[in-house]
Length: 301
Image (cartoon, rainbow, N blue to C red; front, side, top):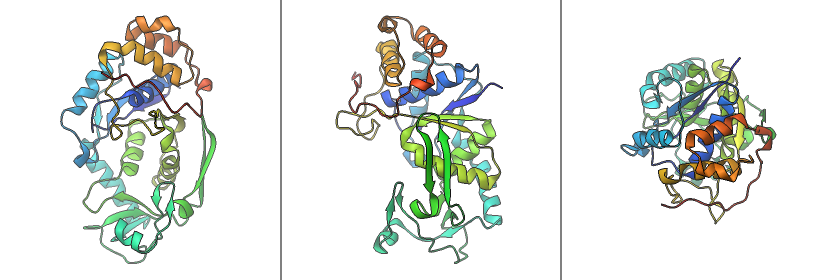
């Protein structure tokens, strides 16, 4: 059965080289299996949305030769779905209202884990109303969540000890990424997720939430991050340059090299569509490195 993959950028600015690597990997993984490749705009965190950046993302992808299946899904159109599943969890006692702030937890001496503060379950038995409070998923019975990643192999995380109860909806009524992405992937039929290695720990949270909601567990492939010369993940926050339409094929070839593929250097003179055609035909996921050099060319404008 053909796979269904997706690329899900947030519209907080233009795509950069790291975004291109993620788009290319997910595209090649789906298309090489004659599968579908969906496009989702993850605008659930509305205060971070930069006006017009969603349309810029679509133009960038088209300029680089990408085509996607079906309409673009916007998370901002999905709020009723998120609310529906959150209410199910609340009704079953799987989540609860929480009045704790990061500051109060810091003052209490909350420990830090791979995803930030480890929530100690202060509000589990307070029976706080959901209105006006954040809503957390109770992880007391989660123990260790594990999965086998297609690049990094077996990965595991003890949720109670390393994360604690995590937020599904903030006190300002903004749904958390964890809830939104799990619901979206289930409703869109996504069965293979390709994304950056910085989300390995998050995947364990998502698997636990999938189990609580009775959802299927997709296959996962995490890819090496693109870092700047200082060894910091390339991102909008670290000043990454936008991808440049004038050098689309050259950037695609560089992205393939970052992913451990072996594109012919002459491909940088071909059209973006020809590069993508070569990439999907010759895609070797087993060649993707778990580790990658810290410094890459960022293709400044």
